[in-house]
Image (cartoon, rainbow, N blue to C red; front, side, top):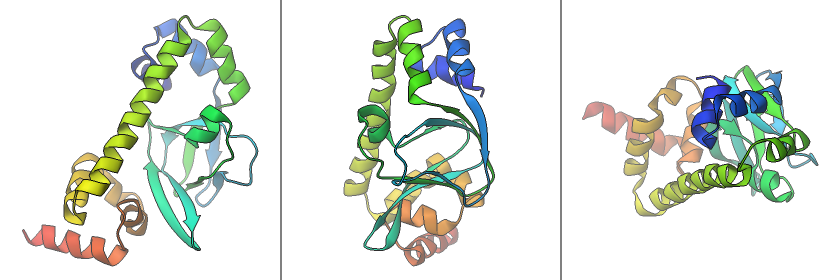
Length: 189
């Protein structure tokens, strides 16, 4: 999926509007281990991942807690910092070689001035992002560890072949040992 088609789908843009938006993105690449966004930065760009995987995490009591793993065809940023200009709280790190397209806040502002009904389109997209977060929170508080694993595996099972399992375990709110036990149990069934 190209950025143009993703923008058309996610924001309900015309082909012309999506091509304008895509022209404002700059290609970037990151090596495995590179920090893409960190709480030490003052600005927070928006990235569209075209290849590779990133991890979104924060430190809690000296321990890295993975919030999400971004894969190709997903947008990545610290959403609160991007929308509200609040301090960046998430670290986004390349866990493989990553190729992405980047847009700055100032270039993004151009879209608001050149795309008809931009605020409505943007609100719909952001609403969808919050809807996904609500669903994740509900699953986290209502499902057992085994059920969370089953939902994750059904939706994003291919990540098990792409990223370290300790990141997936953290994202699911369990230890790597618990994840390993669940995977063995499921494999036996």
